[in-house]
View 1 (cartoon, rainbow, N blue to C red):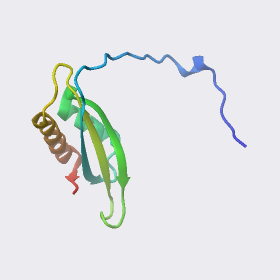
View 2 (cartoon, rainbow, N blue to C red; view 1 turned 30 degrees about the horizontal axis):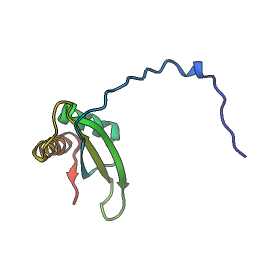
View 3 (cartoon, helix red, strand yellow; view 1 turned 90 degrees about the horizontal axis):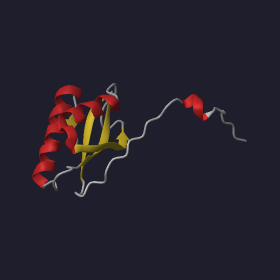
View 4 (cartoon, rainbow, N blue to C red; view 1 turned 45 degrees about the vertical axis):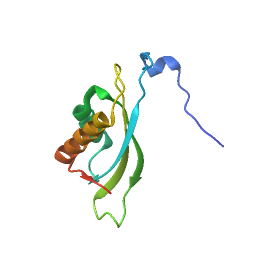
Length: 117
């Protein structure tokens, strides 16, 4: 048997959706895996990376989380996908590499992250 809570749509509050134009230029995805202390929240990681990369970061997602004996006590490994995109031109590999380097440097400095792999 299933149960659910009934609530009216009006009780959810006002939600604003903003349409974004579709870019003519392709996105670039770069994946990194970092080991961070277990106490570091993803919100902190996301804020750190967004600040370091800036507007070129279209999306940030975690696609794997691991913690176990192989890593040690009190740490976790996160595999993170950085979706990079520019509205005015196609990004080069050098552009993507620069963004990844900025993200890793910020994560190291602000979140005690270590690049895994």
